[in-house]
Amino acid sequence: MAKYLMALDQGTTGSRCILFDTAGNPVCSAAQEYTQYFPRDGWVEHDPMQIFDSQLAAAKEAMWKAEATAADIYAIGITNQRETITVWDKTDGKPIYRSIVWQCRRTADDCEKLKADGIEPTIKEKTGLVCDPYFSASKLRWILQNAEGATEKAASGKLLCGTVDTWLMWKLSGGKIFATDASNASRTMLCNIRSGDWDDDLLRLFGVPRAMLPEIKPSAGLFGYTDPSLFGGAIPITGVAGDQQAAMFGQGCHTPGDVKNTYGTGGFLLMNIGELCVTPKSGLLTTVAWKLGDRVTYACEGSVFVCGAAVQWLRDGLGLIRTAAETETIARSVESSGGVYVVPAFCGLGAPYWDPYARGMICGITRGTTRAHLVRATLESMAYQTNDLLHAIETECGVKLSRLRADGGAAANDFLLSFQSDLSALPVIRPKCIETTALGAALLAGLGAGLFKDVAETQQSIAPDRIFEPTLAESERQALLDGWKTAVSRVTRGTLS
Image (tube, rainbow, N blue to C red; front, top):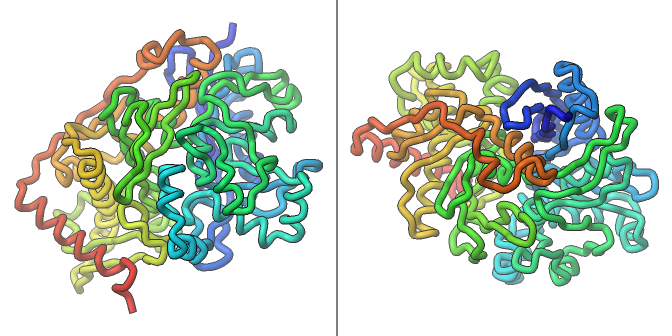
C-alpha cells in the first residue's frame, strides 16, 4: 500500500519536494537551488530546463531519503511560482526563450499604454487583476514579439505555453499532460474568472492563439501520470494549485473571512471571500483560490514583490549575513531599527501601490547606524508591507480582521512574527507545519486521489504551533507606521528625480 503524498513545490529561487504521510505529516524533504538571470535592470528570467531538472532532482532525492519507490507514492501534488511564463516548441519540447519570471518588469511601458488606452477596467472586470507586468499576459506577448519566428510559429500551431505547473506536468508526463488548474489560470490575465475559461477578447488583445494554451481543470482530480521512466513507475498527478492558493488550502482557510500571509520570496496576503466573484475597487486583486468539482472559491489578494528576497539580498548582495536564520539574533541585538527604514522596491512596488517604476531605498541612516540596524529594518520591512495589505483588505472588504495566519520560510523567525503582531495589533498564528504551500498541494492531491473523502477530512493535520500576541502601545505603533509611510512616499512614482 502507498505510504506517501509527494508535494512538488517549485519556487522562485529553488525547487523542493516534501513527502508527507497519508495523514498529512511531513516525513522528509529535499531542495535544489537554480540560477537567477538578470539580463537588464528590472528583468528577471529562469532557464526552464533548470526549473524542471532541479524539481526532478529534488523529487528523486526525497524518494531516496525515504527509501521509497513509485509504488510507495499515493499521488503527486504540484504547487508553483505562479505568473512566470514559458513558451516551448510543440514538436521537440525545447523552450524558445527563458521563462520570464513574475518579478520581471520589462513590460511596464506596455501595461502603461494599455491603461492609457482605457483597457484596465475591462481587464479588472474579466480577470480580477490590475493591468501590470506582474501577470503573464504581457510577458507572453513580449516573447511572441521578440523570440525569433515566434509569432509565425504560434499562428501555425507549433508552440505551447504555460505557467510553471503546466511546464512541469508536460515534462513529467513526457508531453502527455497539457493542462493547468483554475488557480494558476486566474493569474495569467488571460482567463475570465467568471466563466472559468480563456477569454477571446483578451487573447486577441495580447496576440495569443487559443491553441497555445492548456486545458483548465479543477485543482483536485486526475491530471494524468508521470512517465514511468522518471521514477521507475507511473505516479498519478491529482492536485495542482498556485503557491499562494496552496498555502491558503494548507492553512485551512475554508471559511469566508479566513486570512493568511505567506512570507516567501514575495509576500502574499489572501482572504477567502467564498463563491461570490467581486471586482476589486482598490489595489487588491480577486483571484481563484481553488476549484473543487464545479465549485469555485475566490480570494481577495494583496501581493508584495520582495519579502524574503530582501533577506537573500542581505546575504548575497551586501554580504551582511551568512544565513537567513541568524537574522533573528542580529535583529534582537538592538532595541530598535534606530529610525532606519528599508523599502525593498527592487522590482517595483506591488499592492496596494502598483508602481512598477519604484526602486528600493534605505532611509534614516545616521553615523550610529550599524549592520544590526540594517538587518532589523529589512526584517521589519516584511511586516510593514504586510500591514499595508491588511489595512487595504479591511478597507476593500469592509471587515475587521481578528487574526492572521502566517506561513512561509520567514515565518520561522519569531522576531518577525512578534513585530508583525505588534505592528498590526493582531494575534499572529504560526502552524506546526510552516511549509503550508507544500502541505496544501499534498492535501489537494490526496483529495483528488480519493484518499480524503472531503475537504473537512484534509484539515485534521493542521494545528497551531505558536500564537504571537500584540504588546506594543498604540502611540508607538502609530509612530512606526508614520515613519514607514514617509519612507514609502520617497520611492513611489513622481517622488524621485
